[in-house]
Length: 149
Image (tube, rainbow, N blue to C red; front, top):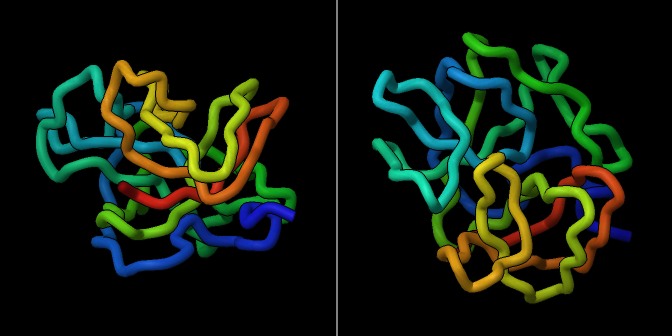
C-alpha cells in the first residue's frame, strides 16, 4: 500500500515554510509551483527561471473542500485567482507530489519537475528535485510519496 493511499495531507514529514498566494494558473494539489513577477503562483519547471520564493508544493485546504481522496488521487483543483495554500519543503522534507500518468517510478528513483508542474522520472537533463520513497506506475496522475533532495 502506498503512502499516498494512507495519508490525507501533502506534507508528510518535516517543517516547511507555509504560504498562501493567488494563482495565475489552474493548479492541483501536489503540483510544484513558483512565484511569477506579479507574486502569483505559476507552474514550476526547471527549464524556467524562479522569480522568487523558491519552489513550493500546492497543498490541500480541507476547510474549503479541497483535499485528496483516500485512493491518493487529487480531489480538486484551484481556479485562476483563487488563494492557494502552499508549502516550501526543505531538503529532507517528505511530501506527496503530483506524478504524471504513465511514469514508472521505483523507490529511490530521482524525480524532476516537468513544465506542467507535475513530477516525472529524472532523465538527467534537468536538476532532480525529489527522490521517490515508493514505487508507483499510475495510469492517471497520482500523488507519490517523495523526499525533497
